[in-house]
Image 1 (cartoon, rainbow, N blue to C red):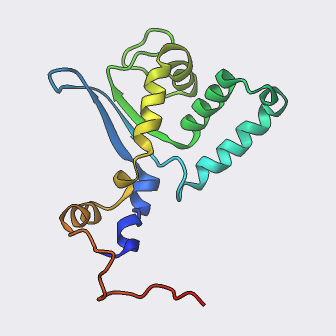
Image 2 (image 1 turned 90 degrees about the vertical axis):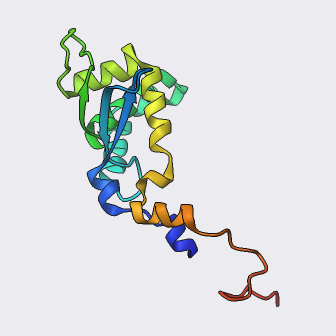
Length: 158
């Protein structure tokens, strides 16, 4: 397996999203989030981040983490959360909650900031943005030896 294959990601997964599920102790799905990749080929993420940061430019200079999380929650609404479902309560107690900017920002900043932190962490895992065929090949490939002479060459020092 080449280094390219090992790190190549799927444009389809990055833009059209993957589904992350949250389950209870019995393994039943409580809620799910279909998310595009925060970064990578998702240029809407960077555009939204730039636009939202400009809105709060003067207020961010003091390092206000709560404000940054609020901005990021807005960005997630704009460019990351494509769909959601399951047992998610909305700001006004509705269940299931409609996917609205108000509900996303409230859920991630006021009601369940730990959920937001967990979702962000799960979205950082690179392998889930790869094609399933690449994932399988990576699991099945043998570890390449540093002394392997049958592939490429090291750059020689001059």
